[in-house]
Length: 210
Image 1 (cartoon, rainbow, N blue to C red):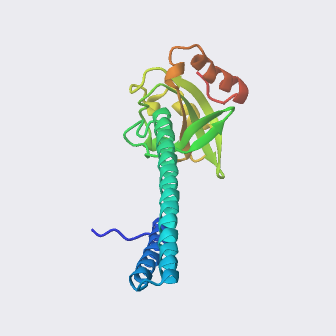
Image 2: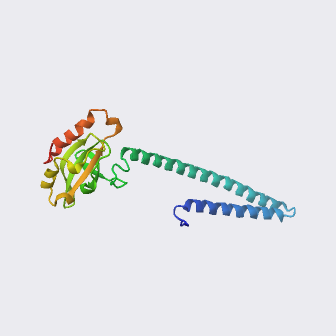
Image 3: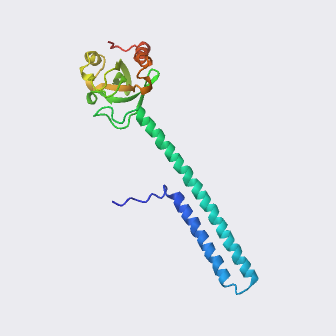
């Protein structure tokens, strides 16, 4: 399959190629003047000046090009590194039926990934704090907050508070959604993670509690 040539992406390359072509034409012109000088000192001097100018311009453009692509390389390397760090914080596939790129939802003072439909999301594959949400007129009300201690074993549809979620959400299961706050590895052995769900419950006071 032939890939289309993107002019905007390759615009710097096209500009540098055009400049080098102009310098090449200038160099050829200076060489022709020298060859046709026939011993005339004025033409020889003119030809030498043109050749000298062409060489200087070539070196300047080559330096600018090298700096441009070097800076561009480091910027792309930095962006790649940052994207890998984010990917490590938020798993690309926390469960088999999760979409690959999470979005964010603020619950209390914490940013959760989601919301995802609870009907399509059942097993949590990593330690996390989960929030059960009810969608109402485009907004999401928090019904339940809890910590998932056993990754890969927690089935949300079998939670003993599931009936409470249905009772407090108009439209039933189709309007139930999930938000997840992934526990960073740096917090896995600390006491802080155990306080997150407690703080959120005290702050939000969801209708469904353990």
